[in-house]
Length: 209
Image 1 (spheres, rainbow, N blue to C red):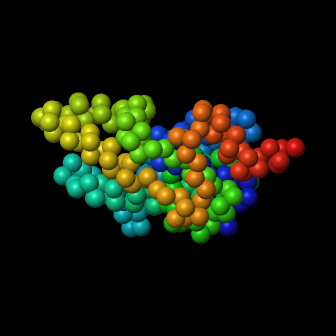
Image 2 (cartoon, rainbow, N blue to C red):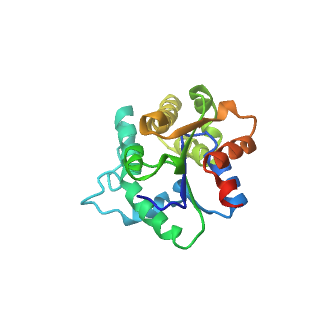
Image 3 (cartoon, helix red, strand yellow):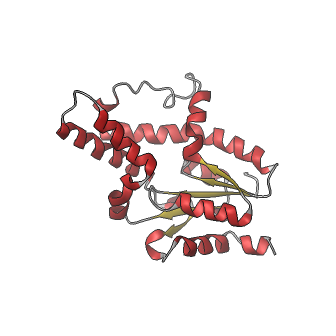
């Protein structure tokens, strides 16, 4: 089982994970671990003999079907999950609390992470699609596509749509299927309210009294 001082803030794109994660980590002095920020580190550690998706040739990415893009997105996260957990276990020995923020393989997590240490943030699918490219890292996808030479505007529009659909479909999960508690951004007035819900669920106030 995973160490008791590691908490997992999971969720679909645009659900507020980063904002809430940073607020929680600052309030409780948690070591903040962003899955998105660390992702390329794990690419550098990938072994072609065991990491099919992280070492996959993506030069023909735009010829892939939407299902293939989704499988690749999920495959990368699945391969990185054990690597991330190993790092989190080590960090938990050096810090009072460790907070992971991002996405991991939910099937893998449910076997080793108690439900009381994980929360899944969600948001209405239409809202997710509407605001997806407002995030800096997501808007960079659009900019990269628009800079491509020899590609028509209509094809660029198709690529932008496929990139968004693949990312959302890959990680828009029903947390109940994995035994984890979900918290909807749609039901909250502000990120602060979400923080209060999560800290109560994780009993962080009790632990610090």
